[in-house]
Length: 154
Image 1 (tube, one colour):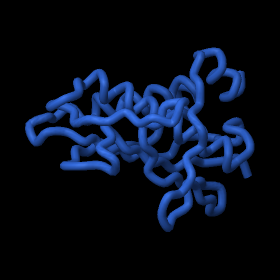
Image 2 (cartoon, rainbow, N blue to C red):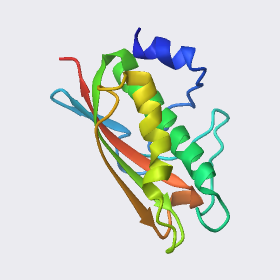
Image 3 (tube, rainbow, N blue to C red):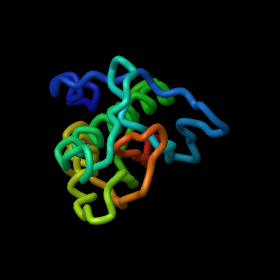
Image 4 (tube, rainbow, N blue to C red):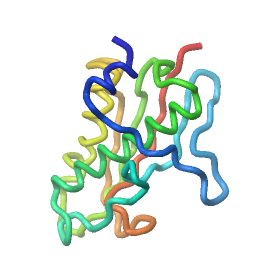
């Protein structure tokens, strides 16, 4: 089953592909790798999931925000490549979690994105390397920001 078919089967709706709002590209292809800029948790209606995990948002809300950031990445990949079926594998995800200084479960939050990628691209190709860090603030007060590197078909 293709990645696009799995995405539909899972019932996920992609938000609009984010546009660059500063001096950067949402995605850039170098050879057979696509690098995505940091993506925010954008809902299909364009709204953002905001808050600070450990203060005014729960770990579970952070998890859902990371999943939504992952859907935004998939939307960018679809726009950039024409189809997410061109993705051969997830190489790396880097997740930043807006969290209090005593919150230490950033990896559990970023799992929202990682588990989405695994469900869309498969148990092997959907799992790459990863970092998950806590930060003192993120743009627009969002809960998470995630960037990725993806191998594509030559």
